[in-house]
Amino acid sequence: MEQDPNCIFCRIVRGEIPSRKVYEDADVLAFHDIQPVAPVHLLVIPKAHVASLYDVAPAHEAVLGRIMAIAGRLARDHGADDGFRAIVNTGRVGRQEVMHVHVHLIGGGEPLGPMIARKGH
Ligand code: AMP
Ligand code: ZN
Image (cartoon, rainbow, N blue to C red; front, top):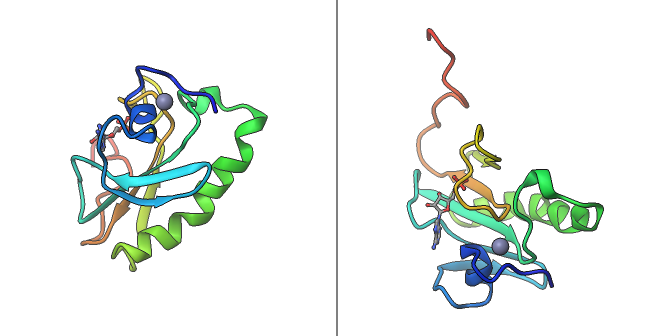
């Protein structure tokens, strides 16, 4: 499986950095975000290193589909049973900080703010 020796999420996959895992299968890992922004804040990642949505190849379609397929169950099982957001920050404009594709699952408390604040509102 493709891995990047210096990537922090690849290191979590390899067990070199601890994480609070909530789900794992052959291709997918989910764990608690270290700096949660809501009562439920999980990260779901492909175990293979894919830097960003810009770098997705046809070979990644199955694992990305699997991530979306388990997102609802993961969110609900962790207490976000009244809605949540699945967010994939990408690149500079998207303010992606960790260059290994990850889906944030965020919810579990009061309704979140607007998806993106509109200028002048
Ligand atoms: P992004 O801006 O979408 O790249 O978000 C990266 C996320 O990874 C942030 O929410 C961080 O809190 C989270 N994060 C960074 N390092 C770790 C780690 N070692 N364990 C869990 N979450 C992490
Ligand atoms: Zn990686």
